Length: 603
Ligand code: GDP
Ligand code: PGA
Ligand code: MN
Figure 1 (cartoon, rainbow, N blue to C red):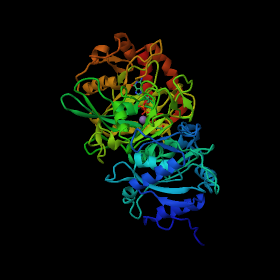
Figure 2 (cartoon, helix red, strand yellow):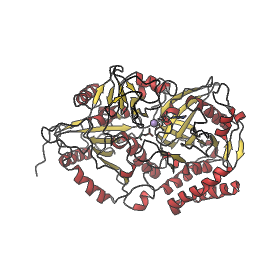
Figure 3 (cartoon, protein in one colour):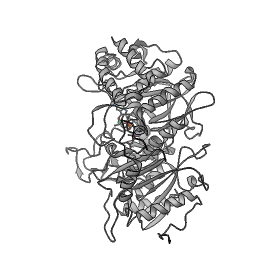
């Protein structure tokens, strides 16, 4: 049998037999014009960004060095949860919250979609490492893609190329992640600005630790190291190996007494992780540094504490709403350049603009490539438009952000977007109660996923779209981990809501930098210094218990943001019962007991 020869296939920079065989197999199936191994070099970045500019996908920004504007196909702007599958061997292991298909059936369908799908394009092989390269066991992956946009985005978001490939040796374990835009080019056919396919599949094979993605170029669907590997596949690894892969930011908070604490926080997509991670405190003497804005891998250390590592290397942040008042650190980070902007607006002088960034210029090119003026009815930027920028150039990155040992977590925050019911902050009584808070977390849907926005749904631990197995088993895993460590070494769990609204629909709490007041209260609770009221739902501060010095909000609003309303909570109970009924018999007994106790306390 003679192997097909595709330029680039013969000189692979590795002797890793399994990887070589997979690359060969994919190339033969997808039929690219050539195969290129990504090395992660500056030269590669320059070559590919130029290629994207020539193709019309990128516009170089005059006002930001080494930065580019891109506008996607209007149908390819967010994660597609309806098309995202967990293809475990048994349907039960995927559970009632995931889409499931038999793995061999999914592979058969997708193999036909992949056949010849890279014709006329280059197939890139991207070796990458999630988390520090010097980890005891580096977490390796290889993404094969036919998208230059994906390659350059992976340059920012992951440790990739030659330095990652060096860790593969001849037989290291890695997660194979196959991606195609599904837009082959006939000979001489002119490419479009944003190639993609109407048919989309984002498939995960948890037992074999594989990812197959087809048809989308959007971040969460196409940068497979992010949600696909670091949450869906990693959550399965974490279940098997006794750790946690969570949708959490990691921040370092230093008190005026110079004591440092690490906090992890899980909020659903577009509910404030990136902003909290980079917060600029409004209270004097307190300092925040950032370690990560989206994903935390947490393992118990020898001392019994939970240590967190950020597997990523960049920020993929929601653009609208970001400005020097809300998130100055993000603005300073992107101002340094070396960044990609997708689906925001382009100014006439070659900069970017989006809703929430101060006064709009008189004229813009909208994300839909249309003329835009402040009188236009449509938004200039898609609500899920994004900036993609390296952590390395963030002024407030904590020096230990890429320490392979991670940082010991003192507090975990769960939070969501709720106009009613959920107080600004509630402290759980213990780990089990905190797990109940996480498991019953609810939030209004946002533009980060395709579908209707503003609909309240349960989003357990902000992981609904990211748990790679049965949600009931996932809850049990949280309960079990809480039994492994001494109670006083476990992080304290809090439930927050920056998004409660008054009767006139405005936010009751000013949020952003002012959230430092809530961080301070949480730390003082841990230190045993701050007061709180015991309520049926946990410990809630009164306005007196929070440091409100200099806060620009009325006392009534703060009290309304903090209010525990028994009627609202009684109305929540049937929704939690419905949610537990959906999960079924796998809901841990402990969580059923928590619900029963809450019901009793509410009377
Ligand atoms: P992520 O997707 O969880 O990282 O969320 P982001 O931090 O990117 O925030 C998503 C959206 O929520 C942005 O438009 C932010 O401006 C907005 N946001 C973030 N934090 C707050 C807050 O404390 N209060 C309010 N009102 N909005 C916020
Ligand atoms: P995020 O996720 O909104 O949680 O930052 C990015 C995504 O939806 O792909
Ligand atoms: Mn984010």
